[in-house]
Length: 96
Ligand SMILES: [Zn+2]
Image (cartoon, rainbow, N blue to C red; front, side, top):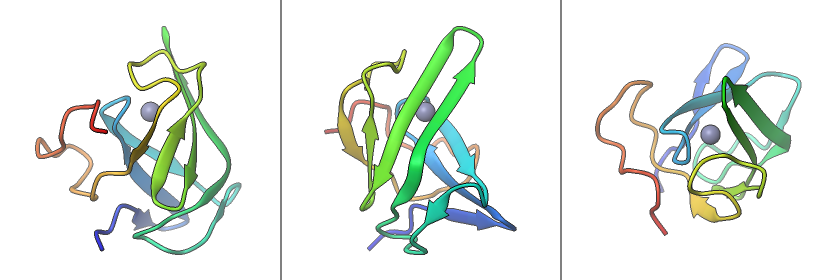
C-alpha cells in the first residue's frame, strides 16, 4: 500500500486533494500511526484568506465536510500517495 503520510518531527503531513497542497497536524491530534491507512482525529480545519478546508481523515480516506470552499466539499476521496510538499505529480483534485 502507498504511504500517504509524511512524518516530520512531531508533525504528520498529507496531501490534500481539495486544496492541492499539504496539510499537517501535530501532537494536538491523535494519529493511528499507520502511514498507509491513517486515521487522524479530531477534524482538520485549515483556513486561509477566502478559503476553508474542513475534513476528517479516516482509514486512508479524507472526508471533506460541506463547509469546505473547494470543489470536493461534501465528498470522500482516497488520500494520494505522498510525493513531497511541492510535487507536480499529484493528480488534480476531483479523483473519485
Ligand atoms: Zn485542504
